[in-house]
Length: 80
Image (cartoon, rainbow, N blue to C red; front, side):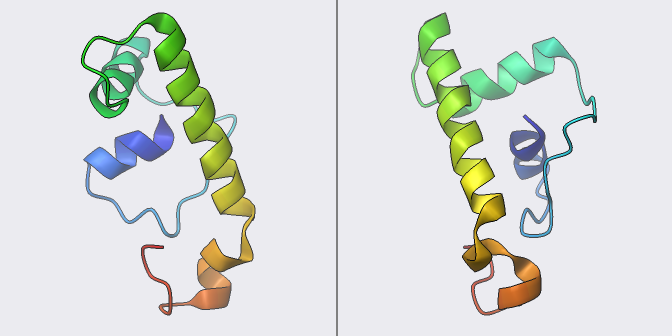
Protein backbone atom coordinates (compact mmCIF):
# COMPACT_ATOMS: atom_id res chain seq x y z
CA UNK A 1 0.00 0.00 0.00
CA UNK A 2 2.82 2.40 0.88
CA UNK A 3 4.40 1.91 -2.55
CA UNK A 4 1.11 2.24 -4.45
CA UNK A 5 0.20 5.36 -2.51
CA UNK A 6 3.52 7.04 -3.29
CA UNK A 7 3.35 5.89 -6.92
CA UNK A 8 -0.06 7.55 -7.35
CA UNK A 9 1.27 10.74 -5.73
CA UNK A 10 4.18 10.85 -8.20
CA UNK A 11 6.95 10.28 -5.65
CA UNK A 12 10.33 8.81 -6.59
CA UNK A 13 10.21 5.17 -5.44
CA UNK A 14 13.94 4.55 -5.99
CA UNK A 15 14.83 5.78 -2.51
CA UNK A 16 11.73 4.55 -0.64
CA UNK A 17 11.79 1.49 1.61
CA UNK A 18 8.78 -0.12 3.27
CA UNK A 19 8.28 0.79 6.93
CA UNK A 20 6.61 -2.09 8.77
CA UNK A 21 5.46 -0.14 11.81
CA UNK A 22 4.27 2.88 9.89
CA UNK A 23 0.48 3.19 9.62
CA UNK A 24 -0.65 5.25 6.65
CA UNK A 25 -4.04 5.98 5.18
CA UNK A 26 -7.27 4.20 5.90
CA UNK A 27 -8.52 0.70 5.06
CA UNK A 28 -10.87 2.28 2.49
CA UNK A 29 -7.96 4.04 0.75
CA UNK A 30 -5.97 0.81 0.73
CA UNK A 31 -8.86 -1.08 -0.85
CA UNK A 32 -9.35 1.67 -3.44
CA UNK A 33 -5.69 1.52 -4.48
CA UNK A 34 -5.75 -2.28 -4.72
CA UNK A 35 -8.89 -2.14 -6.86
CA UNK A 36 -7.37 0.54 -9.06
CA UNK A 37 -4.06 -1.26 -9.64
CA UNK A 38 -4.92 -4.97 -9.62
CA UNK A 39 -5.80 -4.98 -13.34
CA UNK A 40 -9.11 -6.84 -13.02
CA UNK A 41 -12.42 -5.05 -13.58
CA UNK A 42 -14.43 -6.74 -10.83
CA UNK A 43 -11.97 -8.74 -8.71
CA UNK A 44 -12.94 -11.24 -6.05
CA UNK A 45 -11.43 -11.05 -2.56
CA UNK A 46 -9.14 -13.94 -3.50
CA UNK A 47 -7.88 -12.05 -6.57
CA UNK A 48 -7.21 -8.93 -4.47
CA UNK A 49 -5.40 -11.03 -1.89
CA UNK A 50 -3.27 -12.67 -4.58
CA UNK A 51 -2.47 -9.28 -6.11
CA UNK A 52 -1.39 -7.88 -2.72
CA UNK A 53 0.62 -11.05 -1.92
CA UNK A 54 2.41 -11.06 -5.30
CA UNK A 55 3.15 -7.32 -5.16
CA UNK A 56 4.50 -7.71 -1.61
CA UNK A 57 6.89 -10.50 -2.63
CA UNK A 58 8.10 -8.59 -5.68
CA UNK A 59 8.75 -5.43 -3.65
CA UNK A 60 10.58 -7.36 -0.90
CA UNK A 61 12.82 -8.94 -3.54
CA UNK A 62 13.39 -5.54 -5.14
CA UNK A 63 14.40 -3.98 -1.82
CA UNK A 64 16.83 -6.86 -1.18
CA UNK A 65 18.41 -6.74 -4.66
CA UNK A 66 21.77 -5.03 -5.12
CA UNK A 67 20.62 -4.03 -8.60
CA UNK A 68 17.87 -1.89 -7.06
CA UNK A 69 19.97 -0.35 -4.29
CA UNK A 70 20.24 3.32 -5.24
CA UNK A 71 23.40 3.71 -3.13
CA UNK A 72 25.23 1.09 -5.22
CA UNK A 73 23.97 1.75 -8.75
CA UNK A 74 23.42 5.50 -8.30
CA UNK A 75 21.83 6.85 -11.52
CA UNK A 76 22.95 3.98 -13.78
CA UNK A 77 19.65 2.08 -13.44
CA UNK A 78 17.36 4.91 -12.36
CA UNK A 79 13.73 3.74 -12.21
CA UNK A 80 14.69 0.09 -12.63
